Image 1 (tube, helix red, strand yellow):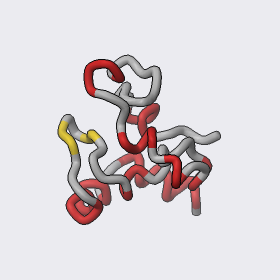
Image 2 (cartoon, rainbow, N blue to C red):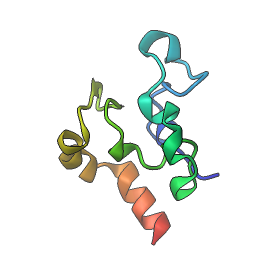
Image 3 (cartoon, one colour):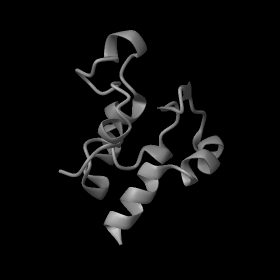
Length: 84
């Protein structure tokens, strides 16, 4: 399995992660509909399409609101490069 966003970003909001109790499990880590997409666990390699993820220290909104911030994300660029 390839690296997921929570490992790359070290946010700790994955199940069993160090910030799970403080901040809760990230919706990306719990979003099973995208399990396996781009070789990730749940939506771990497609985080830009899941509303409510925590990025840059703040909770992101819906997919449309996330689009610009995510387009500049180093993790998104990594996934794109690996999937070419």
